[in-house]
Amino acid sequence: MAELIAVAADPVGPGGRLQALDGDGTPVSAAEPVPDLASAVAGREQRLRPRWVWAATDDLYPRLLDRIPVRLGRCHDLKLVEALLLGHEGGHGQPRSLGAAWARLHRLPVPDDPRDGGTDGQPSLFAADRHQLPPDVDQLTAVVAVHAEQRRRIAAVEHPERMRLLCAAESAGALAAVEMARDGLPWSAAVHDALLTELLGPRPAGGARPERVERLAARFQEAVGRPVNPDSPAQVLAAFARVGVSLPSTRSHVLKAADHPAAAILLRYKELSRVHSAHGWAWREQWVRDGRFRPEYVVGGVVSGRWATRGGGALQIPRLLRSAVVADPGHRLVVADAGQLEPRVLAAMSGDRGLCAAAAGGDMYADLARTAFDGDRGRAKIGLLAAMYGQTSGEAGQLLAILRRRFPAAMALVEEAARTGEAGGVVRSQLGRTSPRPSDLWAGSDEESADGVSPALRAARAWGRFTRNFTIQASAADWALAVLAALRRRLAALDGYGRTPPRLVFFQHDEVMVHTPVELSEAVAAAVAESAREASRLVFGDTPVRFPLETSVVECYADAK
DNA sequence: TCATTTGGCGCC
DNA sequence: AAAGGGCGCCAAATGA
Image (tube, rainbow, N blue to C red; front, side):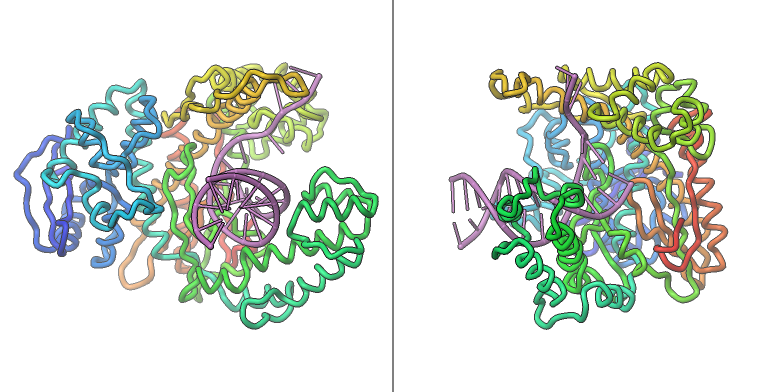
């Protein structure tokens, strides 16, 4: 039975070619042309459950799903794996298309990745189909060869089994991302509308700004006695200066502390005008269709392995709007949120005894407060976050001293990561995702600025904060991706015939959401919990640290947790 | 004029 | 002694 099947779509038409591979990626049969690639893939999926090997999930999988109802279990995404391997080998930023990998393999000139801006007038439709391969190279041949080479490269890293897991999870994430973009997040236009009307007043005609927002702008101008554009930080600062209030910026925490009645008006203005411009009626018309919000997820869009999105700002849905996310009739949302994920990751990675003890329970900050911060949970939280972000100013400085004394191994881990970054080195996540090199950040003069710190030193320290946080954030992303992959597999097993199956509909760093028929909601919640346990064991092995996923079964996102 | 950068703020 | 991590999006400001 084939473990792996390499796939290439024909440049035109519904056909393609398949080739079965053994566990090393060696072909076990000749390439097989199929007239209908989608149905051929669907048939083999049901019979063999192979891992599909292809150039890029985001290119091929949507086209397959257009034509078959079957969802695929596993894949090896050559482009995503190439990016992981290049990063691990210190080659961040090199082109990662199939064509680029093929060219490196054959010591040929390496084509740039297509720019999604499409600036240089390239008809990128064909280019994308060919994945930057030269015209005389057969795509299936390249898929097979690059895949075999990637397997060799994975085997050559320091922890091949971890890298294998990372590649599998990243590829599973790519499948999930395509599926989630198609399924969409249930979004009630009616609830959204009611919310907007309550906040902003009736919808103005022709995309104009709501009267309530305009009125706040006018009231702000009266309060400072000048015609001022409230959206212009420079004008606002000047206006406050003229009424005798000197502000360092127009950020909200500065305005909150400002001693002038105009500040409160401006804060309210900013709040409402932001809702209108970022998530108002125009946003909904652009992004919500047929009761679903369909963002496009970009797997690996952040160097740390977090996902990004293109359009719609799916990863920044304000809490205020969560009440618009409503399950279909007869359905529920299973919302699962990993609590205190990053400090738990720090505990597991460092093996710090004290921190691991705190992370064995349900509320790390409370435990830390009890053992090290005189019962002050707030300070415990600030201190731990400061340790992971590299903050040392203000209160954080003293808290770090306490942490260093009580949790030396954990602090040693983040400080070593920072030193590595300051020295221009790279750091890796638990599964081997690698930070980029600082490249051009070191350029610049050695002139000292007013505070006696040269720009180069400043840049080095900024990079140290980046690598310090990368270690934690990227390992948290490793874990979250492993959860997503496990949950996707478990949900597929719950997929019964004759009713809507549970679907992943949202994934945001440390949170997943499943839309499910109500009668399956408990089974989904159980699958979520099992996925968290599975991911913890796979990523961190035998650790006392718990990674709880707080799960709620709700009709409306706003009611979660 | 269009493209890029900046300030601010939403999410984690 | 001091230095808070990552993203996307909007509108304004700046630059070519």
